[in-house]
Image 1 (cartoon, rainbow, N blue to C red):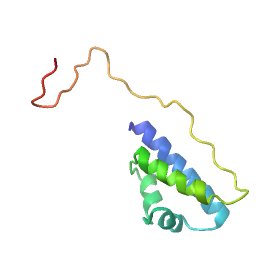
Image 2: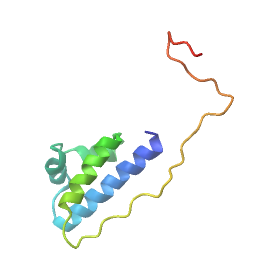
Image 3: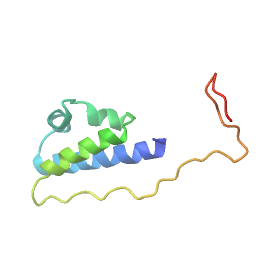
Image 4: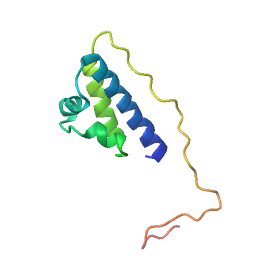
Length: 101
């Protein structure tokens, strides 16, 4: 994933966790332990931990299946994300030992 997408998805998980904690009164570490058995997961995201789409999907599924009745689900991040693209004249990096036809 690109850095901007990592930040947006991580930020969205933090928004979900924050709202869930606010409504339930649970601490963020408690929610992380219940959701994925890693008490420092959300703190790690706050400090730059990268996540992949499978991890994101599992965490969102946890919140979806356990969302408090009547609580407002936070809005997802705006799409699409700007993705830095290489310049057309930039050389393509190749792995050593591979030939390009």
